[in-house]
Figure: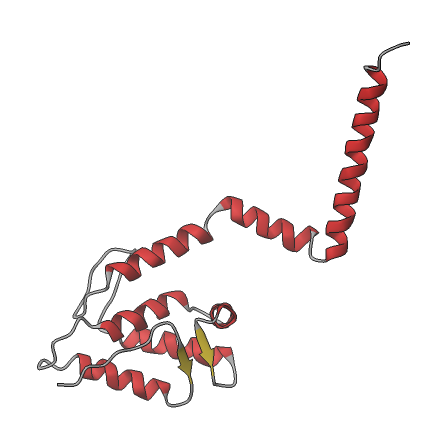
Length: 165
């Protein structure tokens, strides 16, 4: 009996990767092989995370995947193509499948990512940072203006409430 283990902390995408993963999927679908469909679940999870080249760029910069192909668009196309061929389907984050069970851990991680992504406070902070504080000089100027405003308020308060001699 052969046991396959996919190291999900690092996936290098290169030209032979589609063939490798398609063979793993076919091997998992064999009726004589008892498994938990880890490869199908992992590929479906990555398909859920990756829609376009920007998603690949984000995952690559975080160290989740390594792109050994020429362009990030090719990696996005790979995961989107292989996601359509998987036997597992999930609709509206509800656990339904055709042949392979989707791991509850992947569903939980996907929900946490979606909650993080849709947080209004984080979105506001990210937009503010990218719009107004994109350079260190703008942050320094803002802090200097804030310090000047605080000193002016303190001076005014001290002038109004100063003890008269």
